Structure formats: C-alpha cells, structure tokens
Image (cartoon, rainbow, N blue to C red; front, top):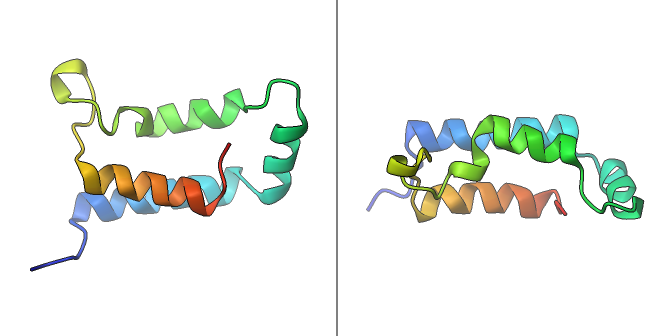
Length: 84
C-alpha cells in the first residue's frame, strides 16, 4: 500500500503551508482573536483564492472534488497554525 501523496496532493500541501507561513503568524492569530470580528476577511479571502473552501465540494458544483486525504491535508495545516 502506498501512503505517499500524489503530485496534486503534495502541491496542495505546499500551497497551504506557504500561504499560512507567509500570512498567519502567531501574532496575526492573536490580533484576529482580539479583534471584535474574530476572523480575518483577508486570510479567508486567501483561502478562497487558493481554492481551499472548495476542496470537499464536488466538481459539478464548481468545487475541487477532493476526498478525505485532500481535506485532511488542509485541516492538518490549519491545525498546525491554530487558524481561527
């Protein structure tokens, strides 16, 4: 059984990690939590721009059509950075 990511999954992981490393420091997280809104529209627009919001959505609904592993890749990165 092969547990390695496909090339597309590796690209997804790299994209999410690079985006979060650049745009979601722990200080940024603190500022987001302290803000009245409690979220960062800029960060969530970035997630949408990367297509992360459409990962589990089927292609017939204009989503990525990702499976459980694709969703896990995104969720693992969000957890690593403690995204709120």
